[in-house]
Image (cartoon, rainbow, N blue to C red; front, side, top):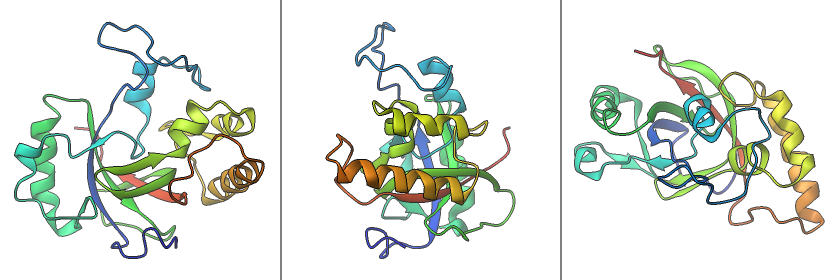
Length: 195
């Protein structure tokens, strides 16, 4: 387990708003990024189920949820689900359960969606290498991993996450322009059935 998250619980609940970083309100491109998958920016936002986005998007409703490093404990499921229902009326959101150890497994109703890759330190310390450096990456070595992504635009196995890590570390060693703020790691993602 990375030292960056060793002081966190093994995982927990997260409500994340999907943010289109690439188009402005009029739909005009802000950053000239072409996705490595054959989907529009809007389609990516509705399909991708990782942790990239704005965590806990409406502070007014988050009162009453005890967050530790940006995550709520599983025993707060009901209050988090109520929060999710309220904010998803205003924003495109997901309610996820994320874990920092590959063996992390929450109880039902959560089901496995795949692995994201990056870091989630707190509600303001978020970076998905999978989202920014694979799906929207500039390096062909990273973009090639888009061919492995599942229906949720996540990596399907821990082995695929390890391969991504090896490729990313090799690029970092050559001085490639990749995020260096914190050490990235595989993060297991679980979701609840739609509806």
